[in-house]
Image 1: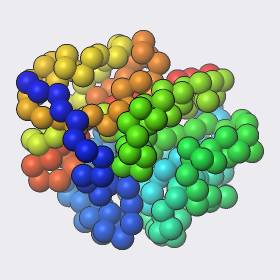
Image 2 (image 1 turned 30 degrees about the vertical axis):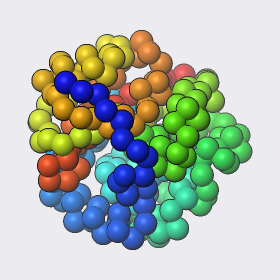
Image 3 (image 1 turned 30 degrees about the horizontal axis):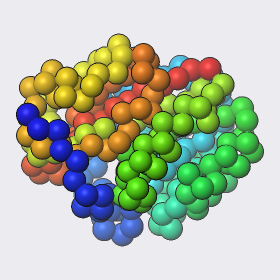
Length: 231
């Protein structure tokens, strides 16, 4: 078994027209099991807040409508110029307030400070940071301090942890704590070369989490880590 990190930028996963066209097609086909897993995960997140901040939601291709309808107001931040319009078309019943076309890692503190009582959901974007910032050490630090920036908040994230060639299983793996990546792959009976998305230190180490299989494309599977930290 080899744990392998390839050069950043090898896959176009950060947004844009091609991404949205692929997502539109895949969401109802090979992404359908993953979307169901995300809906189940979000159903376990104890959210009392009526205000939600979405970070990197794109067009909300994998976000469940029932979850979004549970909030009185939703504010979003995403740098993709197509995201806001497509999100509103895709989720017409979500109560969208402000939409900020910006990078959370550059302008996120102001976004958070403007909504101090809101819950926060990172929508499968933290594991893609390495495609934007090619300095691996910098990315690891940016992701490591997320939990410090969100201290005192009720927040959740689902994010790419590892990706590689293969076919997704139908089972979600429940973990009581963080596992080393080699141990995790072994426990899933996976081997070969896997791209490290540098997101292994996003959640507090001893926080329970799920590892959700995502058949991203034919022959390519992502292992998505999902967890929450309640205030």
